Length: 119
Image (cartoon, rainbow, N blue to C red):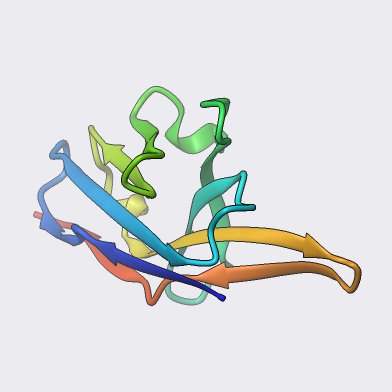
C-alpha cells in the first residue's frame, strides 16, 4: 500500500501563488511517476502535471508556464508550485501515483486539498 498526504491548499486572489505538497509513505520503492490531478465542481477529474523519478515532467496545456511540478526523492515528496493563478484553477487537487501488477494498473490517491482562486 501507498499513502499520500497533501497539504498547502487555500484561498488566494487571482494572480497569486500557492505551493502544494504531497508526501508519500508505505510501499514506495517501485513508484516511478507521481502527479497532480484536479476536479472542479461539476467537472471530471483532469490531469494537471506529472513527474518521473528521473525528473521528466508533463503538464496539461492550461497550466504550462504557470505551474511547476518538482520532486524530492529523498523525502518522497512531490510539489506543485502554482503561479499566476486564475479563477478557473479553482478545484480540489489530488496527488496521485500508481504501479502495475499482473492484474493491471493500481492508482493511489491522496485525500485532496481545496484550492480556491477568488477576489
